[in-house]
Picture 1 (cartoon, rainbow, N blue to C red):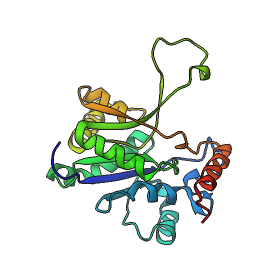
Picture 2 (picture 1 turned 180 degrees about the vertical axis):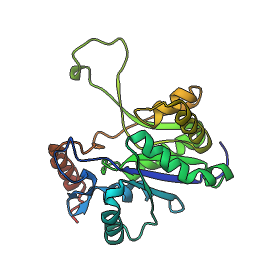
Picture 3 (picture 1 turned 90 degrees about the vertical axis):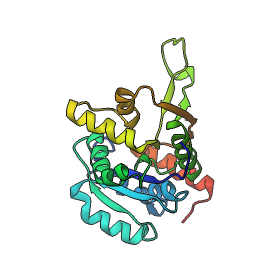
Length: 233
């Protein structure tokens, strides 16, 4: 695709803390002096000064989200959207919120990121967005070390991360069709693969440090990474 990239950045934060073992949604927990979600947002939008920024939250977190955005992300213009019962439904809600701008051409790329991945760098966001703009779609992937799995596979196995980005009109159409069909994808790429298998999705080399905060020990890893990077605020 030629022309200027007009991007919307969607950060998903409507999950629960069930696997983490905490009553609070893990994305609102502190990480080296800032909330996990604040770090995710800051990294996600750093490379895109003109982006539409959408934070998808649980209705029960609305008051907390407003306070955190005011205190920690006040320099970022963020629109909040209420999430659904699943990741897929939360993505759908965000796309419906953006639909008028997508249909009019004001947005031509949508990037979706897990709020629980606060260590993805702004460079990765930039590379994913540019690849999606030029080729149709992009996602970060890490090749799995064969020693990590118990069975022999004839081909490489990759671990897919977020952010994932796709051209906006195709992505909106895919989720609209999925809503009619009752299809629920495991991630953004799964829905695109179901409805637009011919869209060329580029696999960009992911980041080993782009960990998802799922269990308490992941916070320890994330704090160590931030310390190595020199982020001590």
